[in-house]
Image (cartoon, rainbow, N blue to C red):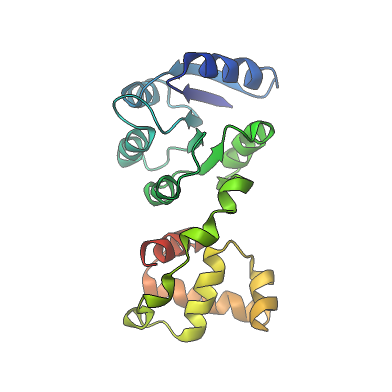
Length: 206
């Protein structure tokens, strides 16, 4: 697995390189310390994943990620930051990042990289804990303008809270098959691809 590490703290970047390469599964192709370097290094190395901080001098990691994904939608970007800021989390979701984890969750970095390589999206436990705050206050949104029923909106809410189909089925007293059917109908009505995009839709209309 080839990784490019971007962090404006050079000591952090070097530490990440040392620790991740010690696993024997990861090679750090390059290290950068700004959003501008992230873009140029991605173009140069085309890494499997770019592991990037958010707050940096000049161009932020979010802006750099947005530019990278605009030119290569298949890019895998995993944000590693000390800030579990609501706005950052939603922005990361919106631009198509593969994950958002906190530096404090040190032991979760290598497994998160592996999960992203396997096509999953990854959000650290402390980030997931903030989702209820992100989606609070959504009752004022007129979801009927999108053709959604009360039950479909309830299901959308539970998806945004990170519940699985099994958990939603138990909460709504439905079968898992019925939940899958509802989810397919909702995605079709909103012209969305998957439940991640549905969660983003929810956050944007809270």
